[in-house]
Structures are given as structure tokens and as C-alpha cells.
Length: 85
Image (cartoon, rainbow, N blue to C red):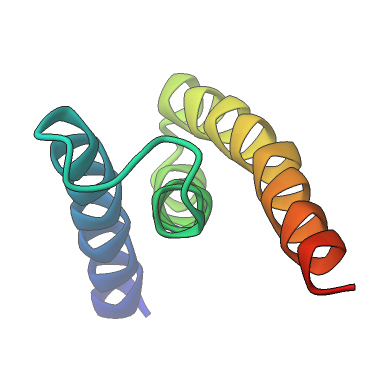
């Protein structure tokens, strides 16, 4: 189990770093679906990892990270659906 928790933590870390790096170098925009998905899933994976290890301050920041990404994702998906209709 510990191995998979570590894998999940590393994947989450890479996703959040990728989102930040790609946005910082203007390869993706902060209002893009990819940016928000990377932040949402990366934060979610990091929550799993940090709760498992009892790192609650880090878990808290990742909960906030996910709570910021979630409404942004909903907004992006809603706009896309409206554009199709």
C-alpha cells in the first residue's frame, strides 16, 4: 500500500508542477481545461498522500487547491457546453 501512496504522491507532484511550469512559460493558459485538470487531479493525489502520512498542513493546502480548481473546471466545461448548443 505504501508504494502506491508514494506513486500517487509523485504523480500529483508532477501534475501540479507541470501545470505551473506550462502556465509560467505560456504554453497553456490558466483558464484551459488541461491546466485545471492537472491542478485538480494533482491536488487530489497529493491529498491522498499527505493524509496517509499525517502531513495535515500540506493536506489542507491541497484541499484548498482542489476547491479552487473545481469551480474553475465547472466554469470551463459549462462554457464549452454552451458554445456547442
